[in-house]
Length: 250
Image (cartoon, rainbow, N blue to C red; front, side):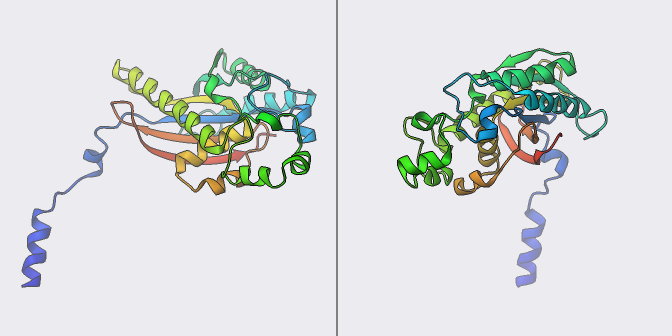
């Protein structure tokens, strides 16, 4: 009897091929997240957030930006050969990302498109302070912030940043779908120049991992983090794949 039941279930179960399950998807969209090069505040470890336009890159940061630009240019040419070449460059509106984005765009013969939602976390009252100064001022609050438990006073939490970076990725996916719907369904790669916390939150929200782990990610300055999005014809993100996190370029 149990054998007959098993045969019946097997006979009536729908067979879904890989091809049919992917029929509603368009070609993949790859997002190459680039962290900006170093500033003087990066070196001194002062918190530099999204509420302040500066600082700009220092001399070392400009060298790093040029090397990051070379690394992005190499995608689809000398490295990551299965990926398409980067065809658009987005950057947060802050000076350090605009300068890094400009270096990437020049190398690719493109222009920078500013995306405000790529800005760094807003540190509020902690802006310009070091972690040691914050501990003296607010005790263990900075550690609770790093574990995703609270927002910076007058600023943002990892949840806040993750939500707006998710909005960026969903916007990219929708734009990719619109371009594909117009008859240009091809694989694309776009670069987004952003910040340490913004990038780790983009990865955290994409992988669906516990917020307590987001702070443990560390994309170093001028590094590359690559996400690939599988997008439906309607512009929804169906799958997100992390291809690399914080790959050094210098």
